[in-house]
Amino acid sequence: MEEIRINQVGFYPKSRKVAVVINRDAAANDTEFQVVRASDGRVVFNGNLSETHVWKESGETGRWADFTILDNPGRYKLVVGGRESHPFHISSDIFRDAARLSTRTFYLQRCSHELTKQLAGKWARPAGHPDTAVSFHPSTGRTGGKLNSPGGWYDAGDFGKYIVNSGITVGTLMAFYENFPNYFPDRSLNIPESGNGIPDILDEIKYNLDWMKTMQDADGGVFVKLTTLEFPGYIMPHEDNWERFAIGKSTTSALNFAASMAMAARIYAPFNKKWADDALARARRAWDWAVKNDNIPFKNPPDVKTGEYGDVNFEDEFIWAAAELFITTGEKKFADFLKTKDIGYKGEPTWQNVHALAPLSLSTTKNNLPKATRDSVRASIVSTADKWLKEMDNHLYRVPDMKFIWGSNSIFANKGIGMIYAYKITGDRKYLLGAAEIADYLLGKNATGLSFMTGMGTKYAANPHHRHVVAAEGLLKDKDGSKQKRRQTAPAEDNVVIPGFLVGGPNAGQQDKAHEVVYTYTLPAKSYEDHYKSYASNEVAINWNAPATFLFGAIDALMNADNRPAPQTPATPARPANRR
Image (cartoon, rainbow, N blue to C red):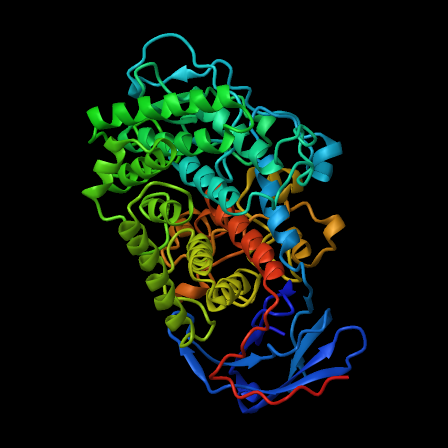
């Protein structure tokens, strides 16, 4: 089973369907494969394995098993020389649960909010961190008084709230809404606001935007984060009673805020014009503050040990904020600013480099960019997607080339989003198929053989670095790790892990080795441990789930809008199906 790496959730009838068969021992001599029905083992497809491919990042050689032509809905397994893969489905809505569960994690990350059993089920918990009387850290420049800053999302596996990481997160989710406004309508996510006549995804994003508004200072600047001075232990949110602080102000926090609020102003105007007008006014004030304070980096003060999100390059934030303000207002000063900048798409965004969010927004959102400039921006997206597709055609796991750093899974997801934009620009289905193959990687077709989406697939990440999950399961009492092993194969109803989180993924840096994490492999693509202490490879984070939501939701929406058959991988010599 571990020699066959496959998307454990499944495939759309018209998507490309490729598994990776690792060359080990006798498996290296096999030349054929079969797809069988999971219910009775009946063969529905016979195919030939491809030539061998090598990947130095994982230290593996292997071959492709391409069964793209199989499009009958059902539950199947792939068999090579008597060895079976994990089961998978073929279905016209195969990523729908992944999209919904990924989006639901934001509700489950709510701060200052009780998760009721009615809406959260087994993951119900009391409200944590009211944040109605937050202290000002000296780094804010404020003395005396308290900040009323409730709400928002817990950033990751800890209980902090960070403006910089919130920026790319809400930006990605709002971009999804602008491109697919009907995908998460009212009553689709089962959240407290469901039934209010507003799309549920906008209600959920607004919960964090409302918190972000509270972080703007009177002068227009924006506090960097709201956290304790150091990370708490593995406890539930309501058990954390340490003092919480508003900490720092920086150019990056102001610009992430400005970009987010500018997007929100245009998106929420049809639903709440007063709120949207306030968002735009706040965006302008944050922009003006950043222009006057254009080189204010943030570094953790000596007494602060929580996430830093440090950044000393502000050009990308200026470009993103200017682009969103230009799209929303059409004003000349923002157009003039963009004229002097490179707004071409060169690769996927990260929290530290949000430049790519500007060309993505400018390419598909209605704006007054000159046609020649807009065409150039769109061409840069397509050109980058073409580069990635070329890399995929030569890659053992059929993914774009990359280095494995912290949060590698979100990098893959964001590359998939770039391909979605290329598809929307050109209508060429090769980009949609490429995006779907990147989703295959996240769901099990990778060097670990694990689905990186918690609770999804047969063998999935079950022990994330997430205080709520760890505290609920009581892992700290299990010194021998037996509970972790049980969780990996336990039925879903017995599993405490929250489904739908995209864990960080392989990270060659292995920065948590100093904290008792023992890595099985040193190879970059296998530098991953499904252990709750592995914050460097197995933490969850809102900025990783946002591109997962976009990727799975976009693929589901577009696959169901496009019924053309998928071409078979040209390099794979497969023979006609033996179908019954």
